Length: 119
Image (cartoon, rainbow, N blue to C red; front, side):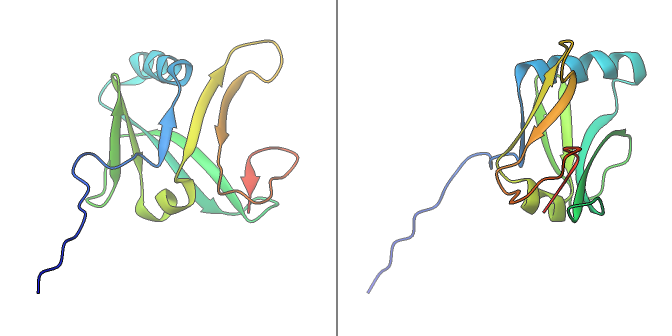
């Protein structure tokens, strides 16, 4: 008796996708800082809803970091954060209202008024 298994071959889906606008802004900011750094996106306990997002430029990578490249921008996510961010999208807006980075997380069941914490 033989059994068949379906196997996906190819790159795994990144936990966080970057829109073109976010990619361009991060690349611009990295050019001012240090092109060798990566954008780290993480989830940490805290905030009024239970968890909060962190984004910062990082020069140190862990062996288990999940790294994806969007154009010239490398994004690193630790495995614990990756589970909570799966399917998320990072966008950037430079308008007069709501300017800045915005993370849309389909896994968040509740967000707070400030928009930086979730559960």
